[in-house]
Amino acid sequence: MKETLYMKIIHLLDRHRTWLEIVSINTVRKHTVIKNGRMTDILCRVLVAKAVHHHFPYTKGQVWQIAEYDIEQAIKSLRTADEAFRQRITRGELTLKDVERVISTATHGTVNPDLSPLPLYTCYTYHDK
Image (tube, rainbow, N blue to C red):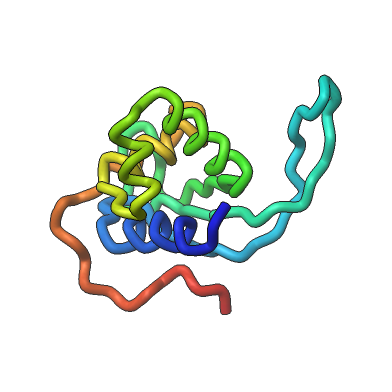
């Protein structure tokens, strides 16, 4: 995945969040994928997000680790299904709904970010210390 696209998704998630906070964007973990009919472990970057407020059905403090590989696969599947999405992603003009769809697809519907159209004015909270 292109670094600019990954950072655009992270920036929109952090800037328009309502109940979800980005904890880390550079964590590297082993991720299991299926390639050529076999399960293979790969090292990939992981987006770590945490619920900072209770948001049914999520409880405060719940953490998700979303592999960059899964985000990339979600983008690929959405590109083939939606021509308008493909054009926006090519131009780098993602909307909040696009980011919500990417995260929801990457997590198989587990995490729905519910981004707010009004941005939060925060300094970036997702840089690893």
